[in-house]
Length: 521
Image (cartoon, rainbow, N blue to C red; front, side, top):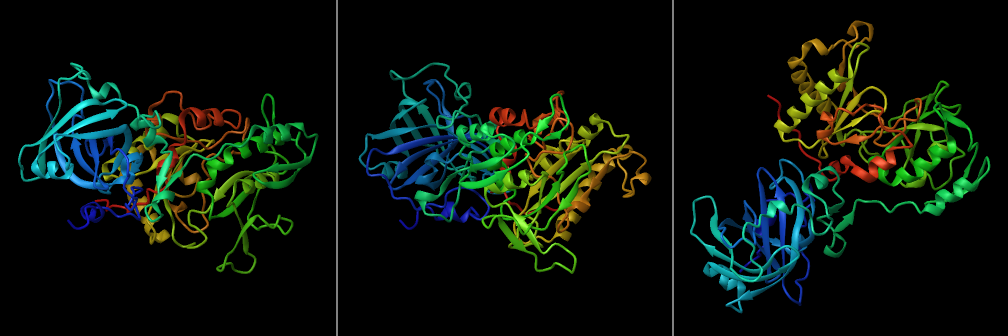
């Protein structure tokens, strides 16, 4: 029969898609089935039966149903690997099947009227008794011929004890594994498949282990200083009651460290493997801050470091690299109120991993005008089929991050973002200035593509900002650009964790979503 997954693998680039490549051993027990709700170019449901070590699959536009009066079109598609049974996540746009996927139903099944289900499929008729969490009873698939674009089958549910007239799968939209909807998975995919890893190790959680409460309790128990055991590291923390951010009441260093320790596992994917520029305010946000890039000699040995081979005399030679959560806690204790990672990784400092769109309001730019610019970029990126997400800066602006594949130079991403933003700017020319001097802009917004350059950085997701109340740069969903309550400084170190618990991290979709930048005509 050859490799049943040959077609599946040929259609996918596993360096870009988080889907499993295959390789798991077939089960030796009762065969399983899965139904995935898949929002690709069009919404459909993928019905898959475990047969001979693979998942024999059909795409069902209207979804399977318990309604015996309904007849569903089901297009027979290529076999999928066993690991697809619990695949839930986001396939990057412009990849085959690009879109968000949830496990809508899962369970076991038994072939009926045959001892050889593969032969039944080849013969054009499969009867299956399914035992899922939503689907139960007898499903029947019958081949209807070919239509030139695929192999259409008909799917129906027999009139048995499990049949329900009028039953609609769209009335039951949540995943049976995570309890989430497609929209929630798109906003914050919790799991990523590493296609090159052994099957038993391929699925990795994108949800960090929470910091134990007793670590925060220990911090709270200290006086003005103490030695804190956090993330397996011992840090001497000092001046804990010092007021770092003005407010009512002011935010203390103790609060900043507690926030940093809580948020560090979530922020780390956007900082690890990158040189870190630290904006330090040792006297608090009300005083003047300064940029600190050189890794101090008194830094602990475990703190990550990178020697910049391109450093000229007088430039930073060794940068801090935040490769573990404790590194961010160290930075906060060092007085870094802002965290700015490089757009490139230390292993390839001249190759950006993101193209950056910086919507920089002018003195005359209203918040509604800035939102209009962000929505126009949203529309343009959606039209191009590009995966991207926005975040509020914690000050006045909005930034958009676009993950890109390896191999781009900063000149490439800068030119692409410039073309994108100039196209948007033509729609609302009265809102945008292309003058770079602040005075020459006459209060208009700047669409700053020049941030796409080596060692030019934007503030990290979930980083505090040095302002009253300790605002935070928070990732948002595209839909939130239409939220009347949205503000650039809406969340602070006192509220951002509640926001994360409620909405998740919309930037998670960018992890594993590296893509080629399409031509802009």
